Amino acid sequence: MTKRLITGIVYVGILVGFFFLREIDTRFFGILVYAFSLIGTMEITQALCHSGVDENGNPKEAVFGMSLSQKISVYVYAVFFTPSYYLVENFAPGQGFRALLNLSFMLGVVLLCLLVVDHRNAKLSGVGGAMVSAVYPTAILATMLLTNDLSEGSLLALLLIFVISPVADTFAFLVGSLLKGRKLCPSISPKKTVSGAVGGVVFGTLSCLLIYWLFTLAAGDLSFNFGGGWAGTPWLIFTAIGLITSLLTEFGDLVESVIKRSCGIKDMGKILPGHGGVLDRIDGTLFASMFVYIMFALFIN
Image 1 (cartoon, helix red, strand yellow):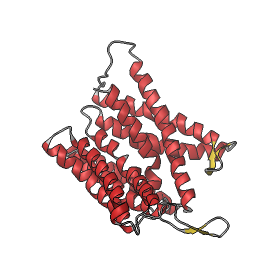
Image 2: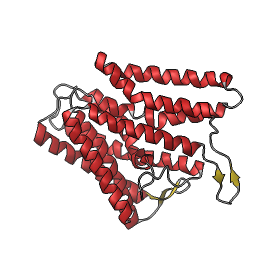
Image 3: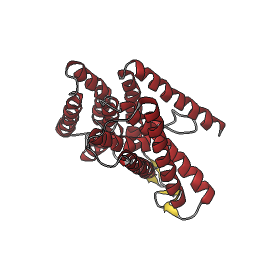
């Protein structure tokens, strides 16, 4: 428990540090996203290629048997993903996403070509594993890069991503441990309860409204992409953001639980003592970032 607490404090300290560095230059935050991408890619690739024993002690094959060439392709994709975004942004501001789209397209083509070039080792199932490893987490992390470069409200959006998810996750655990009751998805994650899920959503939504209120006090009101209307409309929007982001956080946690159960592993990695791997920490955050970015891109100028 002590190890888990110390690791959690260090992790939060690193996040806070990058938020401060972001005030000097927003590109510093890209370093954090880059680290998530590289470490997360290694974790998911190793997990999908993990072979061990099932619950009965019988030998179990890897979910996806990726060849060396397929693994290298995924690693190269992760290595160039974030730098390519900032390289294009440097020469054509606002167009960095095009580099990510082209790089993703190239990965798909390369993986198909490997079925011929490396036909003795590269299998079709490996293509599926490589695509999963590329999307989760690297491609999804593109939304964090885009959120970081929003013209208005980028700081608030990032705060919501990195506050709502931990709050929802923490209170889901605390409320579930206290009230217990009916299991949420016993076949996927036996310890999660309906009461915990409700508690996570309630406190996650409240944290969203609190962050928005504090932000408006410090920086003033945001401008929204809709005219007139009721003065309380922004509060409704942020209530919806908090509610759905909390739900997506818990859903993202279940997605990773399915992956780990299918691969026969307990944690994605060991880089965070007491917590597991990086993906064990950002599983819900990944899904939350997608929704927060979309909401800000649509409704915040």
